[in-house]
Image (cartoon, rainbow, N blue to C red; front, side, top):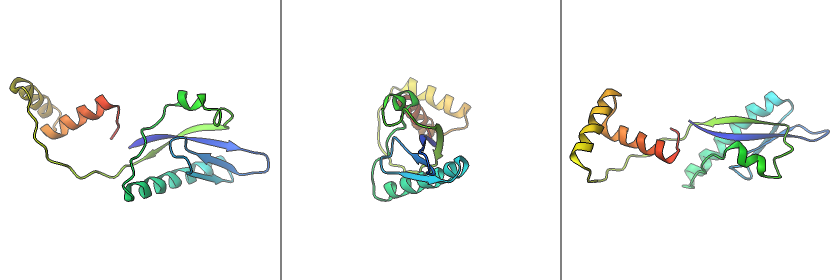
Amino acid sequence: MTNYIAVIHKEKKSDFGVSFPDFPGCITAGKTVDDAKDMAQEALAGHVAVMVDEGLALPAPSNLEDILKDGDYKNAAAYFIVSVKLPKKEPVRFNASIDSELLSLIDERAKQFGMTRSGFIAEAARKELGLRE
């Protein structure tokens, strides 16, 4: 799951609007805050699905501190997290060279965690890159 920040806006005589700083143009609304949160989950999932279908790269999630610096979001009514399950990517086989002692350590640790060598290396890369599965 990947977590993105949603921003709730409220104007007088309007519903609760929701926007996503990482996805300009992805907006929704609800009559109540709870409705808006439910709609936000659906809107973001749909937006991400379309982007994936079109082969577009998904943005890395922004952190709240950076969003708060943006004048468009400083007067928001609320901020919350929307989790989106990203589709699994098709694995690609590649060749790499690595020190045999390091490879042995990787294999030992992967076995301790009940993982394959490939799974362990992929998880280590995600962690180093700041990505979440």
